[in-house]
Amino acid sequence: MTTPNDLDIVLTPETALELSKRFIGSLPVYPGGHVGRGIVICGGGIRYFTGAWVCLQMLRRLGCRLPVQIWHLGKGELDGRMAELVQPFNVKCVDATTVREQHPACILNGWELKPFAILHCPFKGVLLLDADNMPVVNPDFLFETPEFRQTGAIFWPDFGRLEPHRPIWQICGVTYRDEPEFETGQVVVDTERCWRALQLTMWFNEHSDFYYQYVHGDKETFHLAFRKLGQPYSMPTTPIYPPDDTMCQHDFNGRLVFQHRNLDKWNLFEPNKAIGDFWNENECRTYLQELRRLWDGRIGDERPRPAGRSSDELKAIQRLTKNSFNYHRLGYDQRPMSFLADGTIGVGAAACERLWGVKWEDGHVILEIAGEEGTICRLCQSYDGVWRGRWLRFEQMPIELTPDFDGDCSWGKESE
Image 1 (cartoon, helix red, strand yellow):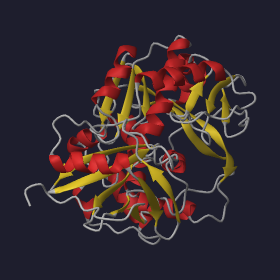
Image 2: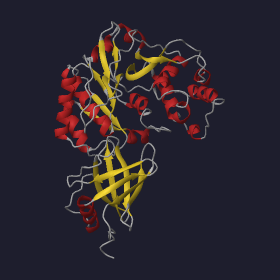
Image 3: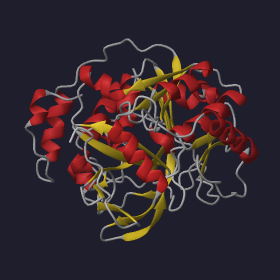
Image 4: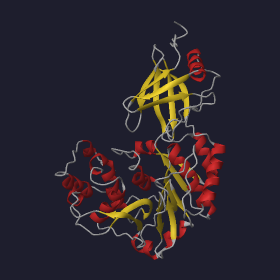
């Protein structure tokens, strides 16, 4: 919950405690409006939508009939076609950028979206699942456990513990406790009972540029907010069971419930490695194959469609598909690359570079390259024939895409 004064605050280790106290003092009472139970998954973009699809199919296979919301950040992460794919399974796709217009948030990116979605979904009882989390039993029963009824919140342990010397304890004004960190690949909360603690969690995440310097992502913001406000929660005592690249979590009786495939997320483009002791792996792979048949990973208008193209776009498509190129990530690496007529990348394809398409924008033809992380770079062709731009995420390094042939590579406007 952003307040007008939030626009002016500067958080430092010296000011954070006082500013958080002011925020807590301004918290309104629970406004009401949440009803029923449901599941929230943050599943925008190629990588996370792929995982969300497998997770959703597994939930329904296990008999879970709770309504599901898939939250995303704008049409560049989830478009109408993707929403149509999941709609038959009682799933609603929610654009957080639209919700943000009514409920402002200072910062709203990946991890920050999780508490935002919990607060602004319609459900009173919320099961938050990471998109790469695969349940092995119907998780509905968690809302009926004595532990949830007593506290209104279930969190699961991570591997580590916040050491006593970590400055975040003092920054938040929370007395040190020798207890597990939170692993928020799955969270169960009653939004009414936990309203104040969830609001403080969101405030920490709205200022992630400060707090994430002292904790890893969203998970400890929940932990510290609940402890700060004395909000009780329950936690199963069974530690994580860790098959390769996976964190397995249990219920209060030690029964396996969730398989959080956090380091080997389901991949739309390449086969995932086999993981020993991963339950229902064959079924998950079947759901992944089904998604590949239904969806090629494109989001929005990424497919090159000759019909209706301008002459400049058609010329660019012809040059891209008829020639080979050198794809150079300046300061990092370079490799050959080819562009196939079906809108996929042939030679040189990698996780972040799988698909391509061209658009006409502001008097220029723009080449977009996309992969697991969505659109990764946008390039504009110069009159020397080289396409130039930069990565949109991660290192944001400059990119040069140079044709392998000599001669006139300029595309120019037809009207010139």
